Image (cartoon, rainbow, N blue to C red; front, top):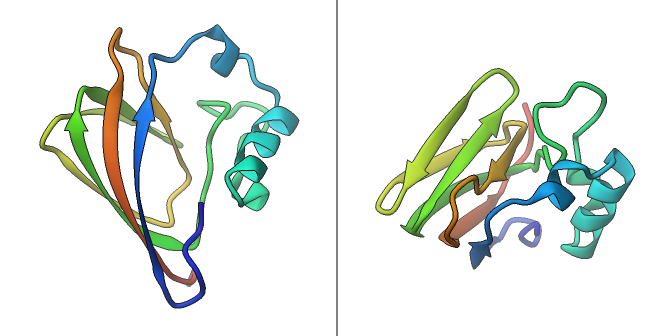
Length: 116
């Protein structure tokens, strides 16, 4: 998940339609999933979180939606992004939810950063 110190990471992620298995994750299970991606500390879902896969990283991220649609879940709001949209994340607490019936593919560029 995180880029190397002072570096960048690019990856393309396919998000399948979200099912009940994701929506029912406990905070410990979510942390384990982030651990499998290399950053268990990114998990930020606690009691009352808007989504079980809420996370925050010390990165500047560019997300480019290549196909499909995805909902960006923030602490106080949501927005749906579609093919051609670009999202910029600056260390905010967020999650991704595919509430459609089709896969969504997103290219992410993560740049190492530091919270201020």
